[in-house]
Figure 1: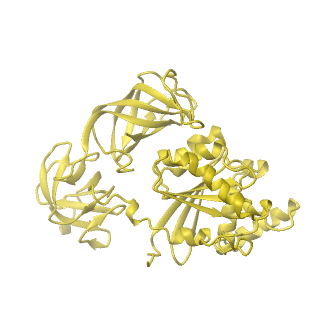
Figure 2: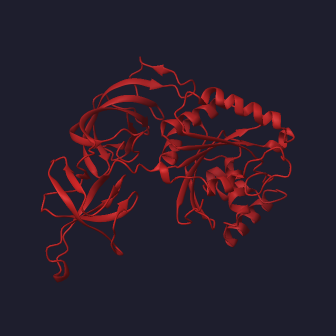
Figure 3: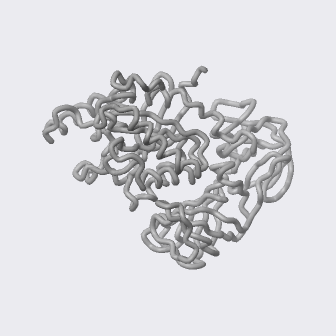
Length: 418
């Protein structure tokens, strides 16, 4: 199958502190020749100063000074690289429990998650936590990389045993596609190049897997949703009566001639044209940024949504959501927050905390009603006006939101509508 080399794959990495995430990404960049010469020289000199024999691959991603000094990943580090087959964005996320919020942030837009397991330790609690978060965020593809195979003499039975451990608990998770790979990030086995030490493994190396992963069907092409970001009224002779609604297609496909409904007003019209910076197009789909013009002059503004008349989202003022609390300050009972949902902004409150999730054991705590940083909970949210929502599992754009503290203007929670 031909792969569009303009297609962008976002993937996140997760693993315990010393599972080798940063080394794996460094190896991926190094072996695929995706590192600039000045970066390479800087890392080589730092490696030499630290007394390493070769290049310390982890230094390519541990960009913050604290991270370099402590040898850990604290913040989400984004790295970009391109191969002839595809463009990539990597979110290198921390493994510690106190950085759960950072992992949620880095993984929220990912097509795939790389979960690293140390071949010597097998599946541990943090592995289960990272798999649970990947499942919660509806990441479509998970690649379980069993790393440090060189330290277990590249034994197939060690790898097979870890697969069995992972599959035992992952059967409870909602993930469509789980793949397994035995690797040694340090030595480069099965990262970019096929390993000569594991001839028993017949699958493709990691980069080939990422380059050929089918992600087109990950986007919802059925439910047409177009949140309006702004109204364009250019005051020029060329566009005297032009009124266009600009934004990014969240899902589905729009074409001129489609019957559409404007929400929340419920007015109906027909799409006249779909314009881009390069001129008119015959269709628009996610994640294209376009301007839609309509046959009728209707009052539409920022926060409204253009949808197909025969397929509408649910207008709702009260809904259940899974949220991750991101703030140092605990959630205040029935406090007012600003909710940002697509291009819509209004007031909201957490009406009730239904239960908190222990992300190590997957158990529910229905007694605790406190929300502290890194807590994940199912809550009931109420808004001042209806939002046009879909379930997060159907649409990651119209099914997600963030809450802003009105006093501090800090983002305090990220939510997924159930």
